[in-house]
Image 1 (cartoon, rainbow, N blue to C red):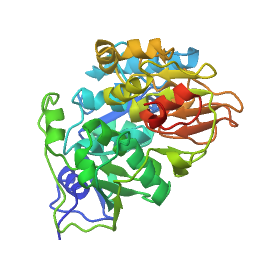
Image 2: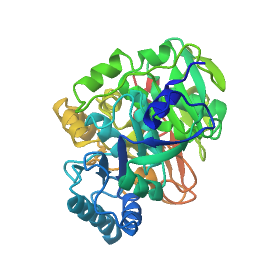
Image 3: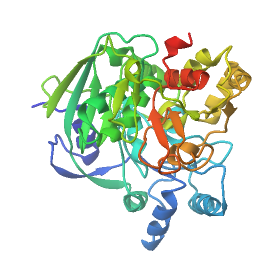
Length: 420
């Protein structure tokens, strides 16, 4: 019996010829990631182990991004703990303010996560890197501490659901709409502790940015990981960034799947997720007249240059509605600079949107866009739980950048076709 791409990666890193779902393994890691919320806890646990050094100074990656630049004394102390640890242990890939970005935008851009890798991160959206053909998953801070010490972690090999997306996507429909449509179908626990393997011609047509968006939200379906086998687009993206060798793997034709789910997405509209769960989805034509107070375009889900280009295309020549506010957050410094070079930042500012330095900020209700009681926000982020972006009686509606930008112009949840 053949193996899925997820099973192959786990087997190789465990030094085994094959593995099967349910098997417990210990595997060597390529990257261990932490941020300014989770790493300080891991650092305290690491120090309890009495270790003199991390397993590999190049493979431990520390990215302050959630409350960066620091918003208060507590967040400054969190960042200081990371900074001090990085200096003490000579962490090569520590990214200070000015060099940093939102971690899941930054690591692919910097060539730190590659096809065939086994990656854990103390952040649930570490699953993003599966878009490059890696096994990547989120863990707790104590697991991160042990991994920094040993370079290893244990796993239960997950079953795999194969998702096949048939058809050519309509204009304004992208990776965010595909993953929201999927979560709306199977639910937020529909892939609990399972690998979500994304395939089909619609996936082939997606850019790497669109695939990163899809893999990013595997966790919102309960997935252990999301993964897409590398193709020429993946390799074009990776070759100019990679600083070490990597393995290109794919599922065997006779690989066993827990189930195969197929969609014809040729007629799929832009999708909006209503409060207070990502699974609460509706096509844009069924949204109705919902006025809003804020729009956020950014995050590890949709803060890449392609997302900003889509938003700028819709905002160009328009103003943000005078009764709302719009916040645009590029995912990394490099994306920010590219947006400036392409004139996108000028378009956003001319439209009277706020453009921020890279930060997770409003996505987790950190800062840079907290909602008051009763306010509504259309956001390109990944979660819309109660109180996620502020007051427990505020509301977050998830969408792709096209719907978000159109909504910023019209002051209500809107289709991009209403603007262009």
